[in-house]
Figure: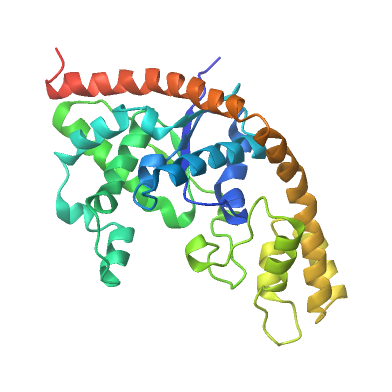
Length: 316
């Protein structure tokens, strides 16, 4: 029987996940737990670029772990771990830094965006593609599920692996992006990509009241035809064949269509919301998942780091 390919993905613990996070990445994880050898990371060192308060960081890490478990990630099938528990991530990042040029990092979309807005950029924000490359390459990831707009992250990892291999000898596997085309970009309530930074999200574990408020705020045009933004979000929850008929029957009736979308989102979110609430009653078991996942991830990451250190000549 052939060995499973390895999948790695992660989320920064920087706030509540929204349905864009779920349909853009998390849903893929659930579908792939049985197909791949999965590593799901709490990217807390990436999050340190945004959260610099110890109490808040700890709270966000636990909340994100709850989110992972509530959506159905199974620690019996997958490795769920905290990036900061594996020192190999930062150590390999330094090794990659020594073969990486500043002009190359200046091509990163996030850097160019920050520069265009005249933001003061920390070294961590500038160098995050190298930490992300280390995240991916330490586990010999075959695939990394990403949105269409995140493909550059995988390109950086591939370039870095190729450069290291060319200099020091074959060491790192070149990962592939895994993109589900139909949900590559999930629209927000204003029609732009759903993002916390745009304040246009529908939280994944939203209360009924929050769902109602968000859906009723979805921007619509006044053409009297199908409300595009409502329909694009609704596609995530119902087959398009059903939706076409539903929207034809209710042409121009935006309030009714929004109410149907509210009911569909509530039906989808409620079981996960209830599971998350139950998990919150036993935080020690949630922490145990991170501890066990950290030990498994560390064993694999350390083996790959040791191989890299032998190649560069610092490990005898």
